[in-house]
Image 1 (cartoon, rainbow, N blue to C red):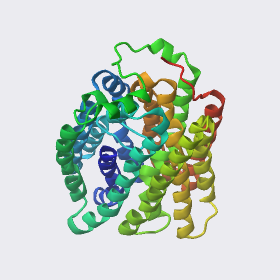
Image 2 (image 1 turned 90 degrees about the horizontal axis):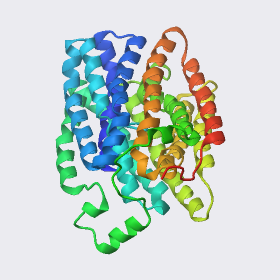
Image 3 (image 1 turned 60 degrees about the vertical axis):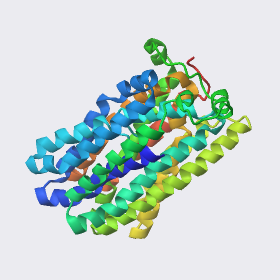
Length: 406
């Protein structure tokens, strides 16, 4: 939970800082969209590589590398912005290489999935995934709550300097306390190792990736397509929500940051509720593949459609919170399915599907800026809703909760 929480703090700082930055540098909506999407350029490059590295050399080193890289790039962001827009775009792309955010991650997200597949018994998987990824939501809460305060007192560069410098503290703790697998942890008793190993997957390192076999399976493609559809809406809300609150609901910078906290708190709560429900259903022999992800798709789709009809800021914030709260059920659907269908290749599978998810971030975040130049927020939400519905259909037609890769 700790690394996901820390990096999620770093992830959301730009969504708040972009408001004073755009005023200082006179950026329009299209430029803001380009800046927000540039982060995903580097993020895209390391998805599959991150999965391969994690499955072959272990998640500890890969995840640690991702955090250090991200922290350094975060600290350098204000310098790059002051030099010029091209330098900022390059630095944001560099940040994406080491990113481990929502739904989302460069070398580190596959590494996290690899660690979970080795440490967590199947019977506890959904709850554990939900708990770990709650760190992402709580990190977002921390970043959104403190970023406006830092900006108000010390200026927008302070957000990047303060949060980025925390990486050195995290990395020291990570090297000392983390292990890639139960066998490497000297503090675990034989009974504890037996419990973990007995209910989990084979821990043998992956030497050869069966690409042709993996890409020939329909459930793998269901993951890839569904991940794209899911992340389109998720990334738009992650990067553009403070701007929506500021432009449409007329909240100031501090209000925008604090009100953005509510949806992320809702996600943290509902992810754990969904994980508990999923594990309970699994223990009773029921399949959760279809129902959990259907909620994760159709819930956000419904609440986003309601934004066109609400008349008060309070109701708009409530709709956002309900949208992201139901989105959290994806932790027990889409995000646990990689370990269901191919546990030995969990990192590679997540690298594949999240590559599609990152493409949604690249195109969706940039497209939102261009849509707002010519259209409205209603148009932005309609595209997201359409993709949520497509994802629901693909998921229910082609996904499975059974293991298809040995």
